[in-house]
Image (cartoon, rainbow, N blue to C red; front, side):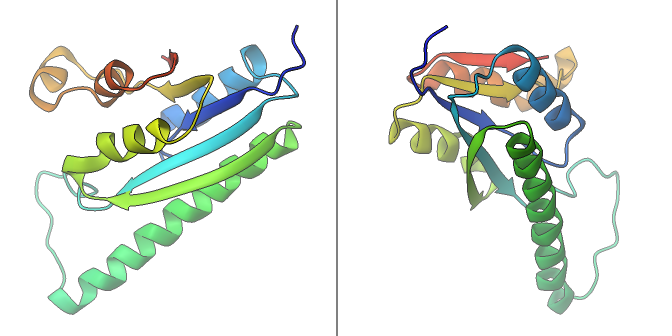
Length: 154
């Protein structure tokens, strides 16, 4: 095993079920004590209501409050994940980006293009065939556009 410090990008949505599974798998099977981990979260707040059939929105002045609450919830979840990785003995840098739904993939790709990463690890939401057909797959798109090896944890 090499003692070279690898730069490992770990793209996660800290509130998803896949996040903990991805982190645990990476710690148990892939990461080395000498690795430097870059935990990356691309926060997309405008899609939080996308899976609801119908939702009654509060008055417009409350939307800013909802966004702040969602941001705080995601940031707290990200902190827990970063602390979990640190507790396992790894060096971790946290990177958080905020964007809209249409640019989420590109924000991650652009960040990775400015860094020299040895690998990107990300989870897969295992969308059904129809959902993948209509919505596309974040992990498929990213893996075909970044310039480093990609490990997708299912």
